[in-house]
Every structure is written in structure tokens, then in C-alpha cells.
Amino acid sequence: MNKSYLIKKLSDRTHVLNEIDIDLGVNTILNLISESLTIGNRVEIRNFGTFSIRLREQRISRNPRNGTSVLVQAKHHPYFRASKHLKESLNK
Image 1: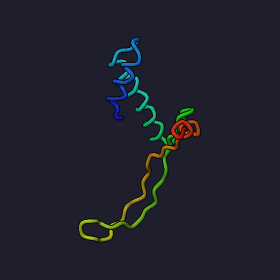
Image 2: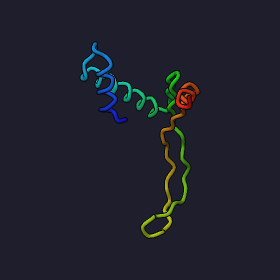
Image 3: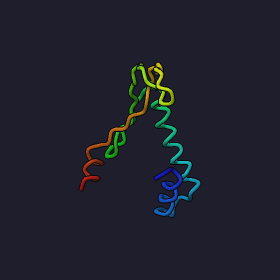
Image 4: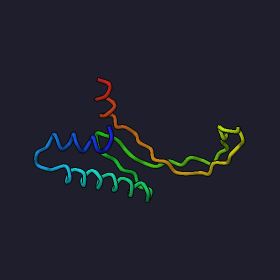
């Protein structure tokens, strides 16, 4: 499911808000999650999961085209951990 499909499904389920309002709401939520992760905070959504950041250490990798060694700098990446409730609902 991509963002536009999510907005369409939400619009089909509710007749109170139009697609423009739902689009604004979804974009606002995603921007808030991104901003929180950028400053190092974690975001917990009850019964869904937790978004956080993790550090990938500096490492030596290989260029797949020519096989030469390349130094990859340390960097942060987003991490999502599903809640127990979400895992249980998927495995029913």
C-alpha cells in the first residue's frame, strides 16, 4: 500500500472528510514522525509499533561492479518495531 492508496481508502471509509483534508492529515502525521526521528526521539503508536533510529557503524564494503573495497561511513537509519498487538493480529 502506498500513500495515495491509503488516502483513497480512508476517503472511502469516511464521508466527513474529503480527500484533500485526509491528504493533509496523513502528510502532517508523516512529517511529525520524520521530524521527531530527525532530532533523535522515538515515536510510539499504541497497538501499532515504535519508530526509532539506529546507528550503522562504519564498515568496509565492496563495489559490486569491480570488486574494490569501499569505506562506508557510519550513518543513522530508521527502524520500526511492530507491537505485540500488531504481531498477534497478523498471525491469527
